[in-house]
Image (tube, rainbow, N blue to C red; front, side, top):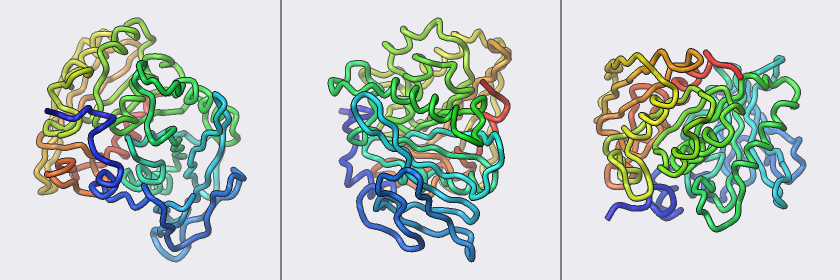
Length: 335
């Protein structure tokens, strides 16, 4: 029997071990002071004498590149005080674009930041990356979730906060997520699509019930990255979730795309995977939708810091960076 794609695929300890996420647990790291503590305005800086270093943020390891800094901010919503990590350039210019990145089930903001090399993106592309933390390490992407956590509302409140934050560009907000976080991206894209200019999904597919409720939502560009041998989120679908093809087809049909072309991305690394990228063009509002079919890929973030074990999460594509690919794709769009 296949595991339930987003909620019971691996124990927290095994997931952290499989993904190499020291940040899932406690344990500080060297290289900087702790920037937690609830103040919401204390930031720890990356190194000045090395390309990168590991710092401690809320007692979790976080990799920071030179010229970047990170801190924890807080937002009250739904009777809870929610937190999010911000990684930003040490010298902010005006109107910086923002990627909001959602971790997977049992993960942490620091963990997905490390896997996705978020700080490197901040350093090289002058981006700001915002990483919210889910309640009990799991996003309520399922409308039937009995916990009563309104993550759609929380992300909406976060958007409003970001829009009034100095030096951030409220017209260049983008949302991406991995696994359970990728499922949450799709739920939010259906519920409040205009909040973000574009969306990115890794290792997650669409719930049929959510698809039915968002058939008439305003068009927004979306890119999928899905592995054909994902042992957690089956490429051909599992109970309660659509297949990869059906998930992509929902957005293609909803946005009336008229063109389709597929290219094989350069196979530059002997990692056991190849990727076919399909471009869907002629879509509503001039959007282009994208589908990265990762042949042989597992439950992993392409270009991530850990090359997956075939016995646990499968293989990690290393021919390209999902983080960089999303950023290049997002840049063509604004709210």
